[in-house]
Image (cartoon, rainbow, N blue to C red; front, side, top):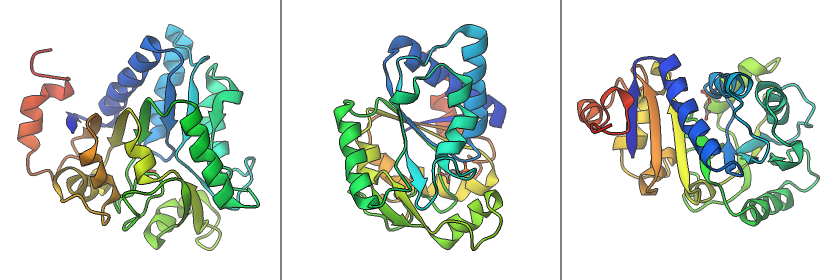
Length: 260
Ligand code: PGA
């Protein structure tokens, strides 16, 4: 794993935006795997700004989001369809026909999951997968003990994930219990992964992901098996890493290498 440690969340966001911009500029018809959550909001802001100020174009990009709650329609204000529309899609020139999220309101969510997996394959797979990490080590909604060989399917959310997401809903009871999520193996099949974690609340999960054993107890640890993963951290999220100094030696100031 390439572990880049930046001084603060703003610098981490800028670094991540550089990587996404470079990917899209070099390959305008890239297939991006997109993520939701609070960590991604400043990244989408930064990309929208580059679209406005520098002409960064997403017109030929295809996108697949990681997950969606079951039971919410796309226009529900807490759905990830709505989040993506508000946070990113409506601010850039992406073609709505090329954007994809799992259909959380499908009559048959498992059939919808199978269709989603097939669509990703038909698009040629994901070039760059953006990822956040849950405090419990989840990626997408692959909660602890999720199969590391899993593909897109229905997952039951843990209480801790529902509590973390409760702030977006009127009450804990209204916070969805189920989601469709791409699987750990779906994520591992991406050509490259870019995971961003900021804040002390993520520090424990970050250690388990980078330095812990590969274990379904921390689904993000499966990324150790992937050859092209970049992890971007701020100081707070990196605070518990045992080999922090080593990562800072290899990637001073969060640069790609000491030789840049
Ligand atoms: P967050 O979510 O960015 O809102 O912390 C990340 C995740 O749960 O994957």
